[in-house]
Image 1 (tube, rainbow, N blue to C red):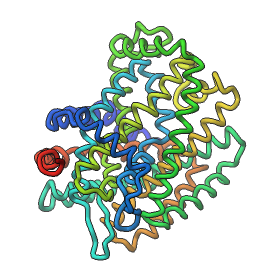
Image 2: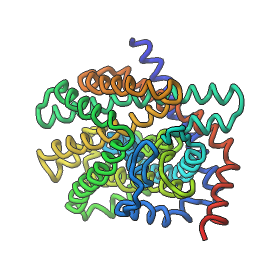
Image 3: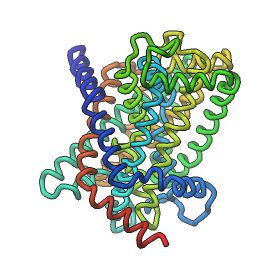
Image 4: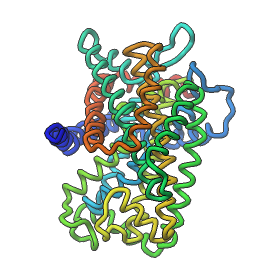
Length: 453
């Protein structure tokens, strides 16, 4: 077990420090240029579609035939906004210094162009069965990008990675995070929390796409508002530190040693690596996960969902992750030497006192539980692709068991393998997207030339 864990860790280090950064950042730059910086030109329309869709009653109820555009985005955000938004920014700051946040912004900006392409292709190649049920995801546009055996093999590899990385191992990690935080804040036994989570999760899973959509469109705005309010209270309480926080972020991006109280040994390379990695892995742009949700949106043109998908990256990184960073920097908690969720807890405790741990526990429940729902849905699409609809009930039961067992199962190897498989998903997805660049450009051109009058 120790040898296997060491091998997985070595592979993770290679993937996260070089291969994935080159692939994801390269893809972001490529699509930004190829699509005429759609993340700038189309951002306003994306925001209107997103927040207009929150209150618009268009009769497009979620069911096996798909979700509304906002419900699809909510499901995507449910997966994007997870424990990484609490621990990810903290880890980046602890290791790379405040300057890592600047590079997190850069990665998110570039990732918005990539996720636009993912959503457009997911919409174009979504599948509608004879009974009217809809499914979709990267497996379908991977097959479309490469005809013959290569496309089939690449799609199958991607499907297996998603099922293992998100549906099983990833959800073990999420339930473990919830159980640990609630045990710390309230003394709730981990296995007891695991049982509760498993039961609730199975009830949501068994309700199909309609119930998943209803849960995510309800829980995502609530969890976002709760966390934003708490973070703003802490930041406003330390309002005099906001200018210096932005100073440290910008100066630290290019000269980490010039920032007082910065991470020991932080360098520009560390700031870039940790900032870009945490940003990309948090908003999941280019990873091939959120296209499963965007594929089933009921829209009139693929670009409409592409524009909406960009907003998901903005909310995840420029809002939620950014607030965590400002809480940590303005409170001075980064000088404590802590990292991850513990650093975030210490930062909130600066204003909330003992309530800080409770606040993080509540947020962790919302963030991680919503991720469990989103990741289950993504895995389900790939189970359908590989094994057919009859296998979905078995998959739902297995994921529920993983959620229960994972709450008390502190196995480092599982966490590391989840990261590894999650990273490996990127490669077949990015390869296919680059191969489909011409189609993505054509769809964008058709929208602005012919569809949008």
